[in-house]
Image (tube, rainbow, N blue to C red):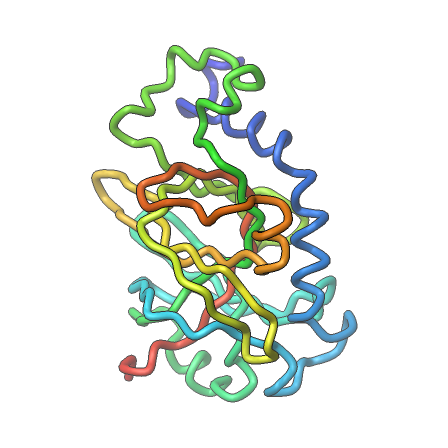
Length: 226
């Protein structure tokens, strides 16, 4: 069975199962971002994080997720597709519709639960670890979770700062490398509720630290995108 799947698929499916429990925590955090199911969110319903991390890709589609009660956007980054919740959709609806199929510049971040360590911390749960070369590509962003914009991340912390959502929710924000392949390098900010960061993690993760966990992706049009 292993030979029928792309290299690394089984390993990271197993990893996703292990960290899947953290999505329950993430769901509680993200409830602050969503109106009741079936309702179109008003312009001020989704608190957002101001971030300078920008991603350029092709906007493929925008759909309304009735389970979360939010709009979701899908964009292509080379051969990879990323789904995020556009916090500015109500204000920018016409812009999203006019940019379908076009290259766009968006800001992107994740509300996350993070723990120290990369894939090596999960070695007991990952079969055939010796067959997976993590030395040259130790970071991953894998879609897994309840909603289309839920991901599992193995990331390298590049820097950190304290910030807050527009509704005042305090965050500890980690600028993190989550994808590094020949065709794509992706750095986004992973934001952890600050009270969780203090009580569960203690000191901040130092630069170049490997972390893993779950992330629900959000974003919006970058200010300079026309």
